[in-house]
Image 1 (cartoon, helix red, strand yellow):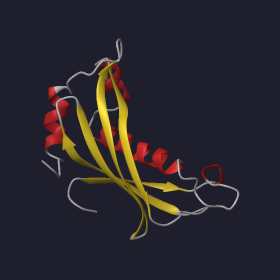
Image 2: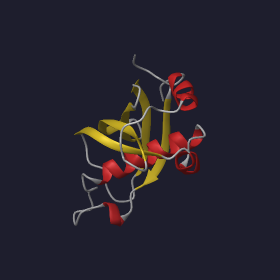
Image 3: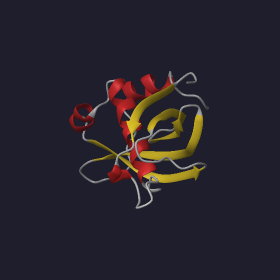
Length: 138
């Protein structure tokens, strides 16, 4: 694991696979979402913080490269690493690994919006300060 990289372990269950026992491609996005959510929770920005600050985070862009398939009962490690931080958004770089083998890599852009009008809003200052310490790219 590199500096600033957070990871979670995820087991592949039958609900994650297609009829051939291979993880259905869209489920990698679910795995990545879990890693991002756990990263933010570990930093003190869990769902209570988000609700109390009338925030929502929405994915505005995603790109994933699938290199190798994950299969039923695999234990995966899913990483999340802050790549870039902007006023009202952040870009996370993510990987799905089985051991040291990279199965998928992705980049996800997440925008901060207010819950009432779903309009862009700046990330809270305390969140920015914490995230800046993790930022890998300028």
